[in-house]
Length: 235
Image (cartoon, rainbow, N blue to C red; front, top):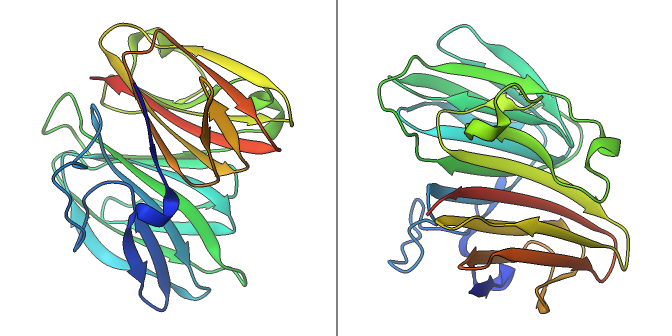
């Protein structure tokens, strides 16, 4: 099953300093048919104006992965972490027993990012934060694992999360096809950060959501240059 969720159909709105679209129910957007996908609970598509951001606020028992598409985001939290994550790179915050953090755009340009929340397998772990650079060459025509808690990714060059799930990214040139297996009992959610694609022959555009289940393999073909972000989790 492949379900396309067009960008124009997503919840969210323009808050002045923030343009936000929600693939799943979040904040004031409520859709009982879109409460999550496997362990994936939130996928927000955010654009933050320069000099603005999310003031300090709390989280607990959630794995929060930030994929920066353009610009950069600066993080600070209550457990002493502070850092900046640039376009193409990733940060992970495991909220665990509780953490207060802020996220700001201190850049002269609009910062565009995906905020991806994944339900943890274990509650009450110690909170943590980390960021890592992922060179573009490592994701050319292949999925690079950016963050993972899957057993098969142990020891890989990926940021750890406390969930049996993985966040991956790839880039495709026009006409290229990338195949990805999906084991029984697993689901995937795919978003082209840019570009137009087909997934097993089904067309999707930039920033559309592609919800996938009960497919042993997906074949993703770029109709134009494309940047892909994929979350794979237990169903």
